[in-house]
Each structure stands twice: as C-alpha cells, then as structure tokens.
Length: 288
Image 1: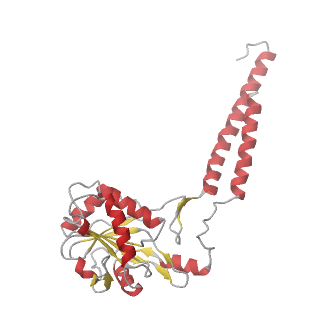
Image 2 (image 1 turned 135 degrees about the horizontal axis):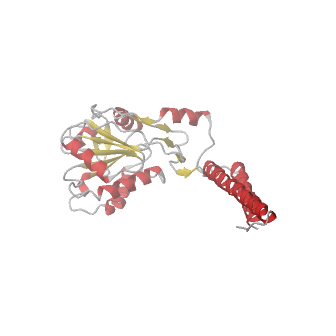
Image 3 (image 1 turned 180 degrees about the horizontal axis):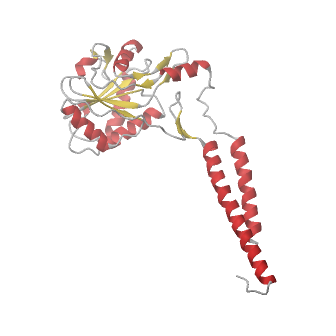
C-alpha cells in the first residue's frame, strides 16, 4: 500500500515537473518582448562606484515648488541621500522608496531636515514639478517628524541635466524617448555636505543600521567601504517595468528534482525493507 502511494506521488510530481518545464514564468503585459534595442539598453545601464568623486553641481534642476536651481544649491549644509528614480513608476522605484522611508523612520539619532537631506531625482524627463509635489505630499506622511518636510527634495529636470548628475555619481540609465521608457538600475548614493560620494547601496532594500552607519561616515566627511553588488538569484528585476518576479519555472524544476530524489530514495528503501520482510517470513522468521 505504501509503495503504491509513493508511486502515485512520484507520478504526480513528474507531471507537475513536466508542466513547470512547459510553462515558464508569464511576463506582464507592460513588459515588451526582448529585442536588440532592449538588450542594448540593458547593457548600458548600471551603477558604478565613484567613491571620493564629487557630484556635478552645475546642472539645473526644478524643485517640487517649480523653482529652477543648480543642483549644487542643495549641497553645503548637510549630507544627502540621493535616490535616482521616477515618480510614476509603479514597481521598483516604489519598492525602493518604501524601503528607504521605512528604514529612515527607524533611525532615531538622526533626522531628515536637521542632520541630513533626502533627494529624489526623477530620471523621467516627462515628469513635472506638479507630479513631484503630489508624490512628496503622499510620501512624507510616512515620515512624521517636526521640521523634516524641508529636508525632502523632489526634483525634476531635462534629460541632459539630470543625466549629467547621474553620470557623475555612476548611475547609468537609458531613456527611450520614442516609447517613453526608462531602463535603470536600483540603488542609492550617499553624499557628504560638500557633494563628495561617500557610499553606495545596491538593490531595493536598505537596512536602517547600514544607512545610519553611512550617514555617520558622511557627516565626518569620510568615504565609506565599497559596496558589493547584490545578486538577486532567482528573484529577477525587469529592467523596463522594474517589477521583481520569481522565476517559477526554474524554482519548480529545482524543487521538483529534490522531491523526486527523496521519493525514489524512499521507494528504494521501502522496496529493500519489503524484500527483507518476505525473506524472513519465507524462512519462518518474524515479520518486522
């Protein structure tokens, strides 16, 4: 009976394993089919660490209030957490922002607007100050501290100006004007008050302890340790939508293979036990 149960389980697992091979992870409707243009864009985007360099302060940006200023006007007072992103992004940028604000709220010894600033820099040239202001009003509700509002900056600007800032800190992205798509990596940059690059963070999850440590280094005008790029394994980041998806096909294949090994191992063991029992009964022994 046990042997039949195991065989049935193995058959079901083989069937599901076959289905996993036939049906790969489904792409979202917003993700375009892979083409040469997309592959070229993916090859161009990245986050290079330029520790010790200084951010380009000359490009002009537009604040959420509609005021045009050189980026350098934001430096000179406090360290800056710089997050290149765009406000209408519904995937990776949202994950980054949520993680950052959640972890900044856990840092009790330092406060935005008092000890450091947070600068969100739109890499979508189609976005306007109105969009930036709406995003600010929505997000600062998650960081409820007196006097912190002035420390949050939501910037927009032309592709040329914003790209100069991003290139100076090693943030490489691609803007497809025809399709209005942004190919970009995920990560943030810590600047000292003079605009020197002090630390990098890769990915979309930012530990409050590590961010606090980086802020301390920036407050001391120090260059932090070089970061190790994060490999997401079977969690993949779509370079167009930014959506993180689980590679179901590969995961099921691995899990299915492991299950099959366990099942066939159990079958072999049960078969050996069955033969041993039959042999003992035949010889007049006591079944076990």
